Image (cartoon, rainbow, N blue to C red; front, side, top):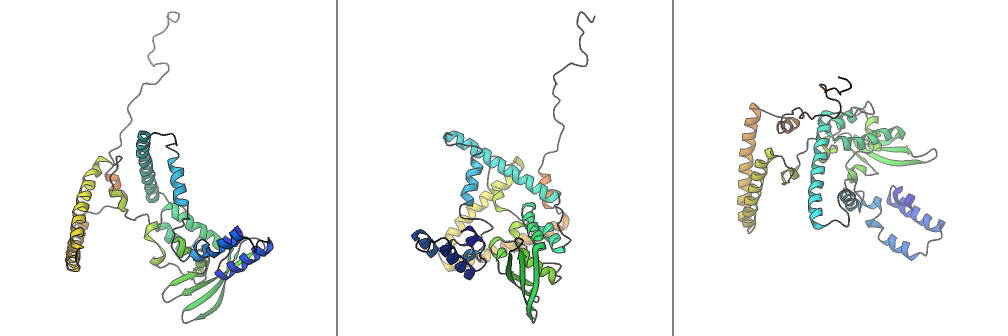
Amino acid sequence: MSQVVWNSHNKDSFDRNWNGFLLNFGLADNKWLSDLYEDHHIWVPIYLDHHFWAGMRSTQRSESMHSFFNKYITRNSSLIQFVKQYDNCLGSREQAERESDAADFHTVIPCATKSSIEAQFQEAYTHAKFREVQAQFRGKANCITRLKNSALGYSVYEVGEQVSSSIFNKFVVTYDSVAVEVKCQCLLFESRGIMCRHALSVLSFEQVSQVSPRYILERWSKKVKRRHIHIKSSHDESLMEPRSKRFDQLVFRSQNICEFASESEELTAILHCAYDNVMAEIEALKAKRKGTSSLSHEEANLESVNELQSPPRIRTRGRPKKRLGSKLEK
């Protein structure tokens, strides 16, 4: 059943494999499986891959949260312990995020191939996401690309992937050289946001050196600006407190204005116009300041770190350098 669900690459093959599965095990009259099949459009991956899920599954979020909090609390923890440990959870998560950011900017994961497209992803993506992309570049070695037909810059390819010594899966990949757009039947990019090995194989066949920016999602970028950093936390550095306070004040005032303006279309239009004017003025001011001094993301973070100092000297155990001799030694 697992093979039927996960290795069916189109809707027709799923129906065919499902019926063969029922006949093979004599389950054609099984009511539970019949009811399960009626809802196959909401749980079978091939019916959901055209939606973007960022690689998540149904219970992954709750399971990961349970696993994370189990390191700090148990079912016997009191309410006071929970509050304290929850604060420690946030602190550890913030520290892990800072360490990941530092690794993304100051270390490099070597490319697995000589592809310039892989180097493009290496430059843009975080280490965690780039490792997933690298797995697709390695899988490209098991793919054989064959051109089926081509007309006016629009080509249709058949990519055969060797899954085992005797099993080959075939995928249809289309490539538009005018729009520089590639689309694979497996819909990995549409569902997980990373290019599949079949599409990469076609791009390599077409000798494409750079992919379109549409295939490099901002959410995976190491330079993405995260909005949640403005949320107050007890572990925030003192240097960041003024910015957090300003952010809270702006949000409070903006919320009051939005509630008042949303009462009518006329008031909403006035607020939109005011927002546009303010944004233009802010961007002009930022551009003016950028000409005089500009800091990169990592430099800005390093500015907020206190100057490193040597640790305090601690008296160690053992024989001191100027030890008083015993009576026998004297």
